[in-house]
Length: 406
Image (cartoon, rainbow, N blue to C red; front, side, top):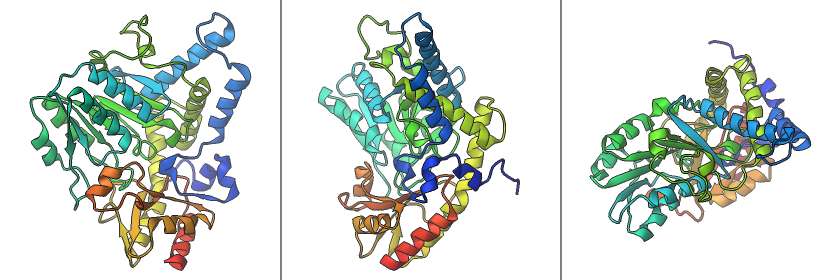
């Protein structure tokens, strides 16, 4: 086995919040952030906390910072020259912008297909277009495989299909979808593929060119960075749409036509600070997407052992049902949801939280998926979501708590 550039102990020293000993096992809700990101945001606030548009040095520096952030996100996603990136308050906010823009181009009777495996952030914005006479068609979840099957999508696609919205990874099951295959089918039908990468991005490197979708978005605060959302779109996919910013801003003024108000510049500074952490994980000086790829290879390797131990424990525990893959699979990330035969998900989460371990319960904005699986969304599931800085000791602590409680 090839040795990694860094070990888990070295990784954990980069995250000040981990020093307390509290077990952060709710990373799908938002990851912890390393010192270099915190320092970058603080430094910006101390030295350059101004608006763009001025000719004085701090304002010019902020404009350069904004441009550099767009370039970094495109690099992070391996966009190359294929498309452009916009930033916003959150992924959900960006999808609303996108759906509203599509609403201006669609006609009554046009169709949008929405996967029932979606986080609601990639569902509600599209369903809201029904008020304009747009037909929204659910892409159903197969209750056995717990995914939206490609064959079912092929049967739903038609001459009036305009958009298909689906997730790269379910934020409940952790199952990775074949985005390339889905995108090929969607684009062959003349429609637009909109992929939610929020639950995938903390775990694996993203290559939008290889994925082949038209739009891809993720939340930077779930990928060791500040609270922002980022969305990539192919140039051809952006072109027919009109961004919502002020009427005097030209339609082809990208990305400003799509970025309402001011982007949180301190967040941009923090996002650029992430390059230093990625370089640390890769064991090299930052050198663009190649470094991103190597950094995420390190993350995936470190995530594997805790994921395997957690899955093995849950699979072998009497009374527990894993809401996800039937076996431990490389086609899944370290997000594990489960239910117990007699204890509610709320009871489980509260018992765990009392022992300095952070997990949550609920529907996690995946109500349609839970209903498809026959699970009451009010209680939902208990969810453990792991990333590369989690340890085997944390998993063993959690298992001990569950043994005592269950």
